[in-house]
Length: 270
Ligand SMILES: [Zn+2]
Image 1 (tube, rainbow, N blue to C red):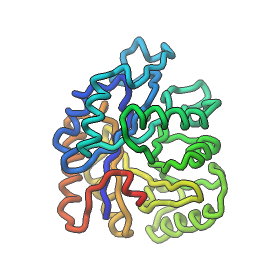
Image 2: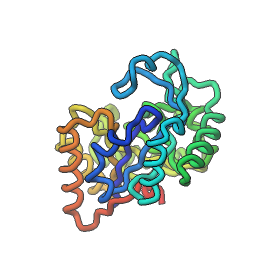
Image 3: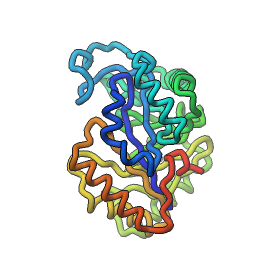
Image 4: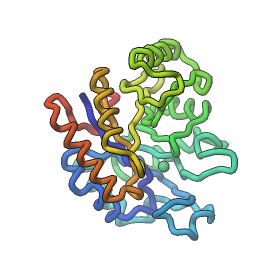
């Protein structure tokens, strides 16, 4: 069984210290997949100065030289891997970036080339800002050959481009839900990679304020029971001491199983 960690929103506004605070005693055990924004535009959240919440200015990652140097070191020592997390991560009046931007294809293409060049690493995973993707956004990610790490609780064929594998995938998710005794309205994370013609997808378990250890252990055990894998997703900027304790106890729980392998999130798709 594979166990991975994904952390979202590393960008120009991120300090090295903020990442170290959460992961200094974790990334030597498990490489952390940092879903990184290449040209961040501010929005309302902790960790972004209020003057940039609505300024609309885009900040290239390279303008935070200290962070870039640290990320290169962390990548080369295999403590972190890098995923593409949108292009600007900006919110549009009618949706999140990969629901509402007029040019998702260009954003993927340029974001990928910029980020992999700057951080000197290969990027194979896309994490949609706010876990939101339109049908066109999904097609753009697939066309670029990137796999998707999301937090998918459901599988809606109407929301996605159709390919030859879609019907089989739909049946697989449906069968899983039925065998787990879940109703259509129940929240769940499908614990296997779903492969499409041009990309693959995997759903993560979110650690947000209020998430309990019991919930995450139940998700881990359900994935384990199904012969699946597990990925935890969080945001360094909202990880409190209590959330960090939950994270460590979950990792300790997973480590007690001899067949659990801590892997980089990219390996979930291998
Ligand atoms: Zn994000």
